[in-house]
Length: 560
Ligand code: ATP
Ligand code: MG
Image (cartoon, rainbow, N blue to C red; front, side):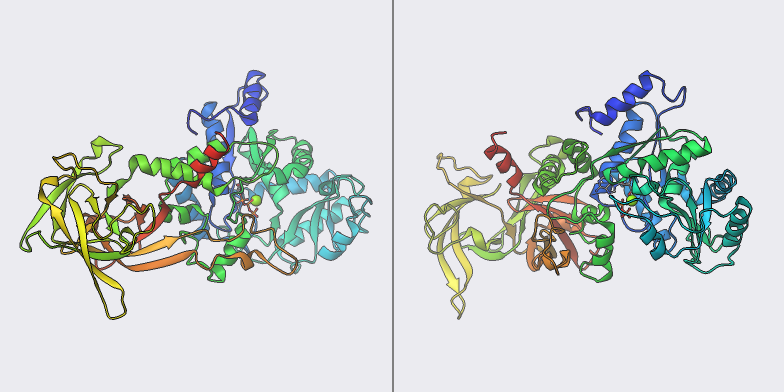
């Protein structure tokens, strides 16, 4: 986390534990525990920054642990992508762990709980267990199998493991309290039967531990001091502690913080998976997705994400952050670092009648005015150039200062030009503008001190290269796409114009040598990034963000 990150309740809590030596001489140990059932998204980035940031602040360590207890949803593809994304964000874990590595230990501990009379095999179906569970106002009912003898439980559990019984026929439950006001404590399921091939343990197991039983014990095995998770686990904390106390193992401590939600985005892995499976997006790394692979491909930087996450802060109540805030930090970062280039998205040809047709020249342009160390480059100029269609009006509306007949403007880093006449096609569309230039204004200033009100970007027609430009916009039309009317789903709020593809753009030739992932500011247009779909024959640029910063405006309005 950046040094400027304000202190927060998590830091205060850990600091206090360090002061009181709550964990003796143990180092501060955290973990980031993704389930490999999807790609990481920007919400996970917050958890990662917190887990790694806290350990780092207190000289501790962080494990990356895959919470791989549900083979029906988990895959190696996700395991690989998650590691890649954590590293991309800028973090390196201490140990790489898998909950599945602890299956033998978890099984032994289950036997220990059975032997202590603290767990039993239940033959009720999932539905019956739900019916017996009671409600917030009514206590649950004991299962008729709750009083099985220890011997019978040990025998049945061993046979569950050996594969004697079909899926769903039996479970192992903790014997706690069917009348507990906390529903999680009403004899929670510890193990279920699932004849499924696990991406790491293969067919070795056909019983799998439930999240609540696996998670805390995995923390304890790794000697995690602070097991930081999101608020939905608050009601699970008594159960987390119960298992650790019954087994008398390392007392890892669970602490909850608020989930990151961002307007116009979807942070549910299940729903993101649905978008991918139904091909509503091009994949997990579609640049419109809030996944780390998606926003990376879109051109977002790990630096900006870390600053954003720190600025969004942590608290104990869930809320939602404006997407404009993320965009603001991203623009800020790219403005400082992205190389500039001139690109015309919607070209209009401009012919400079008094510029010799046999001539070409190179003008020197700063690669990044914010960063002199980025140097300069030579950009070719010639008689025919492209400008944006929007930068010319035959009949200018009031306050339109760009090019129109009789008006003089500056071509950035090049010359003053004055438009004279237009050429139209049969349909009346302007296809060419003719102008003259002032050779004395080379570099963009007139020796006689003449002022112009507008500076425009341009690309020399003879030297221009082409590319496909993908303009991305919000994936959803609603700030909270999960807030839907009855009978609707978040899919009803997909933005039909979240992707616009331009094929006619004209780019300055220096962009021909860009590499996938390279980020640019196309002057006066926005931030762009070369997409990995690019080939030598066809470049593809993704728009990361347009230049306009609506967040700065919102802040200003709010008097910030
Ligand atoms: P699910 O459990 O539904 O698959 P999940 O988003 O909780 O989804 P995990 O892989 O369990 O996915 O998450 C790993 C860690 O990231 C957990 O500690 C979780 O609390 C944290 N996390 C997940 N989503 C967010 C979010 N939006 N903001 C902050 N932390 C999050
Ligand atoms: Mg989870």
